[in-house]
Length: 604
Image (tube, rainbow, N blue to C red; front, side):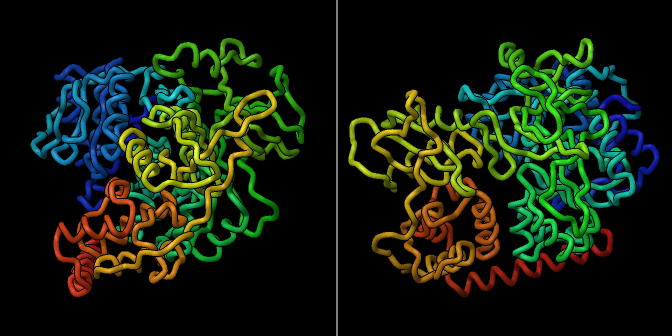
C-alpha cells in the first residue's frame, strides 16, 4: 500500500496523463498538466528551503492553482498549512506563527491577504516544467498537513496529520466506494476544513476528476455542474440545495457528514435526485477526516446511524474508567488505528489530555473524541451528544469557549457566553456598567461586536445574534447555566423603515425570497441576522446579489454592511443599480452562463 498522500496521484498521472484532473471556472487541467505544474513548483520550493519538517502555507483562491500548490508542497517533502484567503487577517497570521510557516504559496489575487513573515512564492503563470524531479524522501510518519480547529483557550489548535493516516483514509475510501463513479467529485469545502482532503485526494488517487467550486451553495452556477457525480454535503446545505432545485443532474453518490443526518433528508435525496447511493460519514479532524463511512439504504427504517468503523479504524465505547461498554449503553467514543493524528502542534499538555495510551493495543494511542455514542447490536454507532461545550455549525467544529473569549475581550463587555439556538450561533453579553434590565438586542452594540469578531474569526464562528443580559444564568454551584440562556427576541418588532431607493427595493425582494418575508414589510435598517438569517443564507445572499447587480459581492462585504440601507448606499456608490441596469446585468450573466455550459458540453 502506498504510504504518502500524493504518490498515488503521481501514479495516476503516469497511467492516464490526458485524462481531466480538475474542472473549474478558472480553467481545466489534465493529469499531465497538473503533474508537470506541481512537479516544477515543488522544485522551486525545494530551492527556497522546503523539505521534511518545513511547513508550507497555501494561501490561494479556489482555482486549479490551489491543488497545484498543495501537491507541490507535498512533493517538496513538506507538510502544507491550509490558509483560506477569505479568512480574517488576524486568524491567518495566528495560524502562520503557530505553525512556524516559513514559505507561503500564493497568487497575485491572494497576495494582499497573506500574513507578513514567511517567504512568499507567488504563482504567476511563469512556472516552467523541469525534465526530472529530484525525489524528496517522505516516510509514513511524516506530517502531511496541519489543519486548525477551534480551541477552548480562545486560540485555534493545529492538528498534525501524518501521511500514514492519509493512506489509511484513502484505502478505506477505496473499499467503501470501489464501484462508485469518481468522474466528477465536487470540491466545495474551504481548505481549512478537513472535508477538503476527502474532496480532492480520493478522486486524484483513483483517476477521477475534481470539480472545483467556490462553495456548495455556488454549485448550481458552475458551468461543470453536469459533470458532478459525487457530492459531499452537510445536511443543512443539502436541504437548501434540494429546496432550490440546484443539485447536479448526473449525481450518483452523496456523502453526508458534519451534522446529524435524518431519514427524511435521505428519502428526499433518493426521491428527488438520480443518486443511487448515500453514505453517512463521521470523524473528527484528529482522526484524519473520517473513521466511519456507512451506506444508508433506500427505503430504510429509523434514523441513520453514523455507521460502523471504516477499514483500519478501531472505535471503542468506554465508560469513565475507560472500560468497554456493552451494546445499548451510552459511553464516550475513543478512536484508535492508523488515522490517529500526531497530536496538537505546540500543545503538549492538550495532546497528552486527548491522545491517550490505547489499553487494547500495546504501544498504540487512541483519541478521546468527547462524543457520546451507543453501539447497536449490529456494530453500528448512534450519536447521542457531547461531553463538553463543543458544537457544530454548518459542519464546522466550534468550541464555545473560543467565541466567549473573543466576546469578553471586546470593549465594554464584562461577561459573555455563547450557545446554539436552532441553527444560529448566539452570543450573550453583560455590558460593563450599563444594566438596563431584560432580554434585548442592541443594534449598535451588535454591529460593533460582530464587526470586531468578523475581523478575528472565520465567518461561521461569528454569532448571528447578540443578546444583552443583566447577568448570565448560573447553576447552584455558581457555573454558567448554558441551557438557561434565553432565546433571542423575535425579529420584526417595532416600527419599519420602508425601502426608498430602487436598490433598496431590489434588495428587499432578495431578502424576502431568502427569509420568507414580504418585501414591503422588511425594515431596511434591520440586520440580516436579526430578521432570521444565518451563515448559510448569507452565502446564498452574496450569490444572489452578485447575479442581480452584476458585481462581486462577498460574504465579508455583508458583515460590513449588515442592513439593506447600508448595502444599498454601498451598491449605489459603486455605480447605478436601477431596475433597468439590474435586468441588463441579469441578461448578461445568463449569456455568460450559457456560453460556459456550451464549453463544458463540448469538453473545451
